[in-house]
Amino acid sequence: MEFWRSSLLGSVPGVVHAVTRRRGGVSRPPYATLNMGLHVGDRNEAVIANRRRVLAALGLALERTVAAEQVHGAQVVDVTEADAGRGALRYDDAVPGVDGLVTVSPGVPLLGYFADCLPLLFAHRRGGWVACAHAGWKGTLAGIAANVVDRFVRAHGGDPRDLVVALGPSIRPCCYEVSAELAERFRLAFGAQAVARARSGKPAVDLVAANVALLEEKGIHPSQIEIAPDCTACRTDLYFSHRAEGPRTGRIGAVIAITP
Image 1 (cartoon, helix red, strand yellow):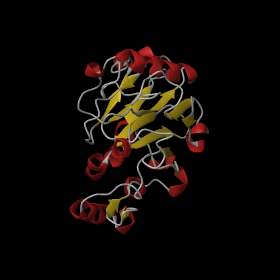
Image 2 (spheres, one colour; image 1 turned 45 degrees about the horizontal axis):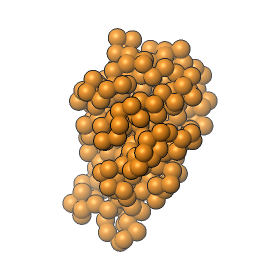
Image 3 (cartoon, one colour; image 1 turned 180 degrees about the vertical axis):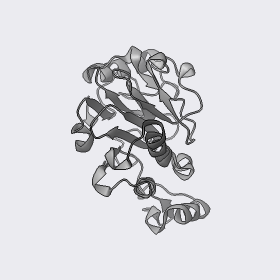
């Protein structure tokens, strides 16, 4: 197996994280091989085997892992010991209607799954609080990144300057053609840095720039943010891409946990 990891998150005591790549699993084409998504048509037993390999490699237990339904929204919820195992082995018992998960419970890993959308991983720089969020264009416009920060501030009395954030591999503007209308919505919401031209010359949006704008507006300094360099649509040798490969493809996984 191969992972992308953030040096910022890697420096946080008592926190483990990883974003998977597509190699090292048991899924068959077109989900080959380390597909982490239970909802894309792959065999459940293959996905569970893949998830078990990843969690074991991180020293974590799949049966205690929590996953969200991921509906391209911006709702964020706290999960506790009582939620351990939700969505780990079955998609239909994932935490419904949400795209962001937060926990202060040790040994309760948070799992998200992605094929071009942006993985957002958060941690308190001194440990003890982590979050995982799924940011597609809809969730980005709805402010999911800001909602995670707000939950940290309101529910835990935190200061945004105490957070570090990793933005994992996602589709980048070179490959993310959108309508002129959607590009204009991003420009109005996040500024000129959030729009671009795709390689084709058509309008494109920049999920990374838009989410960085949201984070900075909430008081998170650029030095607290790390960005993975890869475009998932360019690098289908490493990642799954809905845009480049179509709907019958797998999902990479993003995992973060407070160590047991």
